[in-house]
Length: 357
Image 1 (cartoon, rainbow, N blue to C red):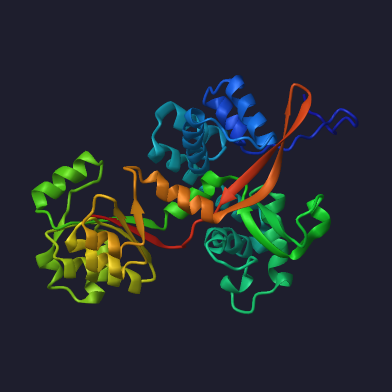
Image 2 (image 1 turned 90 degrees about the vertical axis):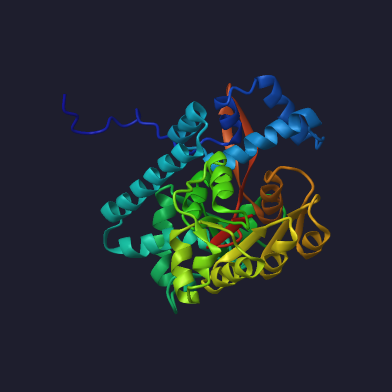
């Protein structure tokens, strides 16, 4: 049957958003009793019991990476495999870019420029989204409509600077000072992962390095040794670092050189090591990381010392430093309107290389 027009009065529009954290917990089969306890603690400003806090924080980390796109959440819960999850997210991002090309008309190039700039803009300390980072002498007149297109399409949203931390926030907003966020934190993480590279630098021989990497799930098909590095110029080494991520039989000087070349290429380098041989590289890195069982010189050189055998504490630190309250999510359940605080976090660099030894 062909419908020639919409019957007036029988249409009701609903705006659909990615799952918020409460809905993510529902998908993870967290009981209503636990969720009610979390709400009570939040509303009454009471600490969450320790036994529950650790479990919920782990779910929160998963939520930040997975996000709230239903298909992505389902893929993660069925497989518990971040690789498959990220592939799903990249498919969605690719779909967004195709939609921009199809529907943004003459402004599609400008819309894509703003879209691609969002993760890098969140890494900066600027109080606003800086259009000049996209194009020299860029103006709101030129990029205002393309930015609004992303917001209207439900891909991004504004987070305005407020002149006073008083409710209601909208009357204190400065519309000229804003940041842009993706509506889904998982999609933002997927875009950032395109710029993150993990390297393994070790003084161990090739056989030991391959065994350890295989156990860690790192492809060890090609391992570069220190002897080859000594024959390369900095330019040649820079090209090699883009193709290879495992280096064995390295001297302390060779490790430090690799860190230096990575930084020269515009990377922000985090280096993790616990031995005397790691000290030069720890010193040259942007962020030196060691453990409490490391030798004294490594601990003295490092910027961060891990007291637990858990790299999640690094994520906790970045989240605590960079988290940005961005919006209230309104949830309707059993006819009652609930307000849950929504938050997002930004990565601290556009191009990041993390090195493990």
